[in-house]
Length: 131
Image 1: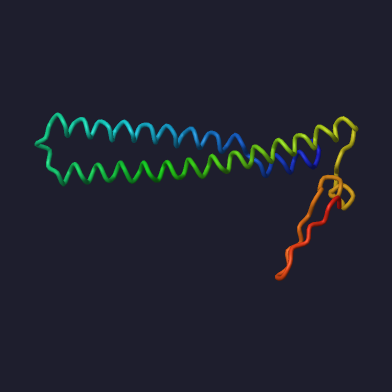
Image 2: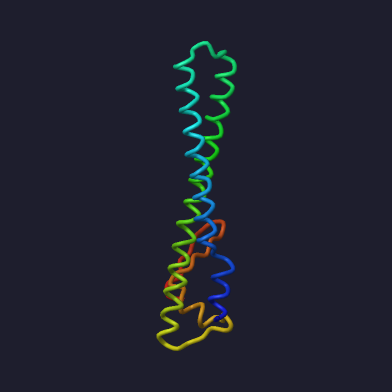
């Protein structure tokens, strides 16, 4: 395994994020079912004390909001990681076609892959093309 592949595998864990998203989605679905069942129960048995119903409803609703926010955050991370992984795979593919192996990242290799770099200083922004 080349150095670049080791770096990619150690920093980009697309599969881990996918499995977490799946678990959270399953938990969210179960929570939605429980909330729906709670509402159905209240409709069928209106004599359930309002305080108990409201407490459970709030509990399920709050958990649903937390799970949805976490899933959205992880999905954004997943897209970012997947995009980075695709780019790194493409770099590896190009290097493989040329039978090149990168053991060390030097300025020449870095400049090959960087097309633009921005320098941000308090008063201005400079864009360097084709470094």
